Image 1 (tube, rainbow, N blue to C red):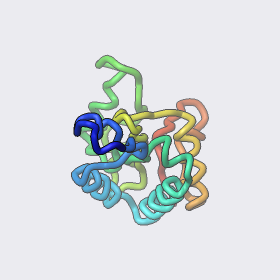
Image 2: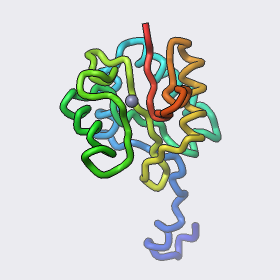
Image 3: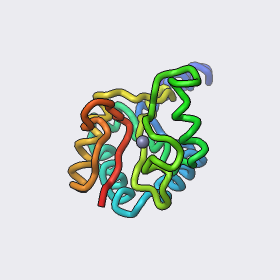
Length: 160
Ligand SMILES: [Zn+2]
């Protein structure tokens, strides 16, 4: 960078931050959500996240985030109404109390990706790549994308 350039031009020449990063508040929320999960699921997620961030390509594509872990029965009922009495696509077939998300601690969590431009992605391709890491981390992990019929790709859970 030439020192004769005005400061504003210099700022524009700063290297771009390609890797999406979480703010301290977002990091805190992620830790709180992970803390709601049963230990085996939390460990599998942490392991998958570490492997993802250790991959030179994947880490540039997007940052895995937990969008939801524990979900109150009231919120489950709200989600159930989506695509039924309320607008939007059907996102669940479980009513309040029926979902693994409603248990404490929670054997289920939902994943999405924070992209470098700040948007959130539920890309089926990225979720399938993350699912591979989750299942490699712990064979007890089940991925909603593997379910017959309704595919719940953001969803991961441990059974037993
Ligand atoms: Zn889910």
